[in-house]
Amino acid sequence: MKVAARGLVFDVTGRPATEQVTFFGSLFRLRNGDWLCGYTIGERKHDPNGTIRFSRSRDGGSTWDESPFRFQTSFQGIRGSLAGSELVEVGPGKLLLFCTWFDRTDPERPLFDPVTEGILRSRLLVAESRDNGETFGPFCEIPTPGLTGTAMCGPPVHWSDGTIGLAYESFKHYDDPKPAWHAAWLQISRDGGQTFPHRFLVGEDPQHDVFYWDQRLIPTKTPGEYIGLFWTHNRKAQKDLNVHFQRASLSEGERAGMTPIDTKIPGQISSPLLMDDGRIIGFVVDRDKPGTMKLWQSSDGGKTWPSAEALTVHVQNQENPLPNQKQQVDFAEYWEDMAKWSFGHPAAQLISPREALLTYYAGPPNHLSMHWARVELD
Image 1 (cartoon, helix red, strand yellow):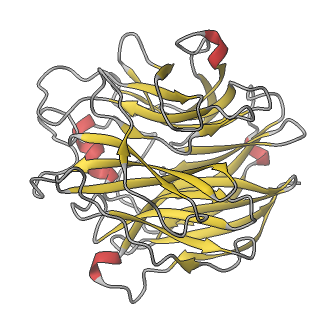
Image 2 (cartoon, rainbow, N blue to C red; image 1 turned 90 degrees about the horizontal axis):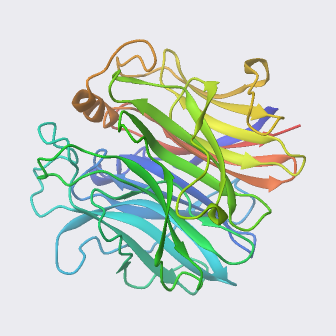
């Protein structure tokens, strides 16, 4: 594997103060050949005025133009912010946009309360575009009855039979004094995204010591089956574990039959690709020192990921002082530190059977641009 080219999707240099930080990037290839890269943008990470935006490429990712469309961040008359910008194309030019909305009625409240360890009240939203993402209609809520502290995790899973699985996690709301229980879910639609009535449990530790954060799932050629990578954190031990892997199917019932397993890859958020030859590629963030973003590959269905075959895509020279894998970290401090990290959130899509397009955010603190890289996978 090797990096063939790289550049910027969205350069924050010279932009207004309200557009100095981009993160939570997404990447999607339309049927007409265009690429859309979405990102959360604001004055800082998790800004109370944060919103989402798109840039479009018509030349395979080499050049990008910012979309002029602007999203309304209030929902049902309540002030809010938007995070995440994942897409599914359910028909030619007809896109569904998924994101998380956070209640910003009190703009002084941070995303995470270190006392209750809950997050701001949130909702999962969907909007429709009928012009290849040039414009979008109003947002509607996707209900998740019985769950709180919900936040979208990476791209939806879209199978060849039309089934859509919206990936998200649940935790607890800001003011909830009860202990937090974390779980990773798919909300399932079998009618082209009109409704999402079914829920599938992707990962949950019965003892609630291990959290399967930021799941990134992709479909296999078998409808209902997926493979996924997880940023895995041991709350009891107060440290990250290695990246975990799962292969499961909706046919298993209401929950995945396989508990995520250790890949031995050090790192956090990881975006998978499935090659025609059966290889699994993982674009992995590792915030140990030096901070890196690497492509790892497995040729045996996710059992082994040889470090000698990993490709370094990005090295971050300006990194906060948290060593990712080497010491215990208080949970509340971890959430505060996440707002300071200055690179990450990988996205990856195949351009061809042997080439991939990657996006991620990186830069000096509080000056984070969206980057792209094109990688040859042979």
